[in-house]
Amino acid sequence: MEWVYTDEVKDHFINPRNVFLDEEKFVYNASGKSGNIKCGDEMAFYLFVDDSTKVIKDCRWKTYGCASAIASTSVLSEKIKGMTIYDAYKITPKEIVDTLKGLPAHKIHCSVLGDDALRVAIDDYCSKNGINIKTQKK
Ligand code: FES
Image 1 (cartoon, rainbow, N blue to C red):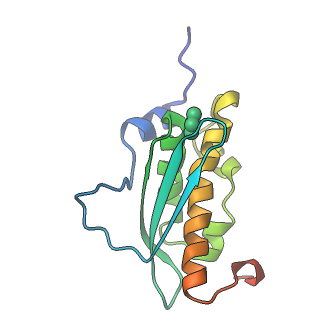
Image 2: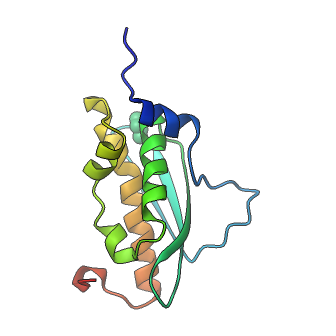
């Protein structure tokens, strides 16, 4: 049977970026969790957002999800560093899958897990700071 994952997926699965480690003293000011109803897996996302610029300075994540969820969220975590929360909110799972040069069709839903948790974390930041992200055009 042929290996179905791209080299990009394998790279990010084997060497995931920005994973939250308990022993690490990562300072964050927003967080969010999401679950995948299809498989029962969970994802948590942590953000450190600069309050004056609304730029995501750093992030971490952790999951009980599969290889596709790990690779997808690793890519996502690299993309959002340096973005404003407004731009990060607009990233789509398709952009993540494209960066990974594809996922098996039955694993596409896994790429949504990190994306959902990121939005919950941004929503958390917005609610703490009186921002209505749905009305922002930045
Ligand atoms: Fe659960 Fe992929 S099977 S996230």
